[in-house]
Amino acid sequence: MTILIITLCLILAAVLLVQLGKLSDLSTKLKGEVESEEESNSWNANLGMVFMPLFLIACVASAFYYKNSMLGYGPHEAASAHGSSLDSLFNVTLACTGIVFILTQILLFVFAYQYQGRRDRKASFVSHNNTLELVWSIIPAIVMTLLVVGGLDAWNEVMADVGPDEDHIEIEVTGSQFLWYLRYPGPDGKLGTKNFRKITPSNPLGQEWTDTKNLDDFQPGEIVLPVNKKVRVRITARDVLHNFDLPHFRVKMDAIPGLPTYFVFTPTTTTEEYRARLGALDENDEPLYPEWHELYDPEDPESGPRYKSFDYELACAELCGKGHFSMRKKVRIVTEAEYEAWLKSPDQSSFYLRDIRNTDEDPYKGKLLDVEIKERSKAFKTKLSDAVKATKPEDKILRLEYVTFKTGSAELTKLSRYQLKDLADAMRENAAMTIELAGHTDSQGDDGSNLLLSQSRAEAVYNYLTNNEKIDGTRMKAAGYGEARPIDSNDTQEGRKKNRRTEFQILTY
Image (cartoon, rainbow, N blue to C red; front, side, top):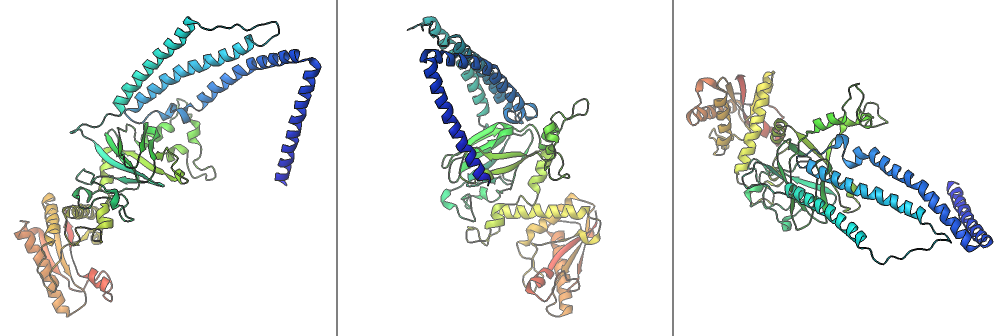
């Protein structure tokens, strides 16, 4: 029914327009062509003079109304070191073009009114005027020169690359339909090489695993950067043209397949500081920006104000396909300490070690790598730190996951030395720490033999630490528990594997 009513209304509107056209033609014939044209000119000229101020007021008022949300004023000042240069250039350009816009609009309507067509007036023909030619050539040329010089100055500042020895963070962002791939360097601080021919479902960036710089690179789900630290972003694309856009930082650069680009910027405002700016109050404790104090979700009273949910974001500023809208990535700017803690989080683990290690794509399958040793050491330190802070005795027990023995004996394998070195380093760093080294077995075999084997293995670790790492033996004791303390079922192969373990418990710290 609604569609029928709308259709009828459109038909009636069309009929009305046709009839009005016929009435206009009839009126023209009755009045005469000349008189009718003069009347029309007068109406248009007068209406133009009414429309002009309303139009200009609407333009200025709408620009002022949307200046915070669309033009980067108010709380949305640039959150990067170079952003103020671009904002200043924008303000100068806006002032110049704004003045020209207002003057030309006034002249347009005033001329239309002043020189409206009349039967007693004849137009003048001016073939050439040197003064006018000079005015509208020289003035725009001067203004354009100043704008271009200012623009080049800002360009040279903004687009300057980092120096060879300059302290900075380098990350990589790759556009794809319809998501962004992020890549950070690992502890070596270097991003590995890529080859598009190596792209597979398990290797979406085509990283060259024979390049050891790739082995510790990781791919987080969000961009996290420290405040007041220079960042160099490598920008690439995997399929079509994308655009790397960080609007709050005044960063925008095309991501082009086969043609890497970059952008260097320094974030100056943390996410929390920006949220505080949006939620600021005036001297009367009233919101400076009321729109940011509205509910984040109008249908959920518990959602809180909008400013508390604000996040910087990475967007794609190119229409790269139907899924373009989904190319949104969260960006967090944090303190240096928070950034370091984020880097050390287990979530930021090597992509190679997590997804490629010991698969058919791994060129080092079956070998222990330096990056692997470092990752294990990092994980060990994290677990040790948690165990030290624990209050329950059972939470102060750490399994030595990579300390292994030859089958059926108490002879340590060569690769065990790496984790035993981590334990020795921890003992040296914490001179007051004492521990118990414990050996455990599964339930297979004779109980007495299992107890003896577990004791021998605990003593083997004790002897290695005292003889090879020079740790004071009075700070350690060795105990074998055989099959008495299982942590899983002995009815399955997986459970028995977990029960065969060597661990230590922190006694004092």
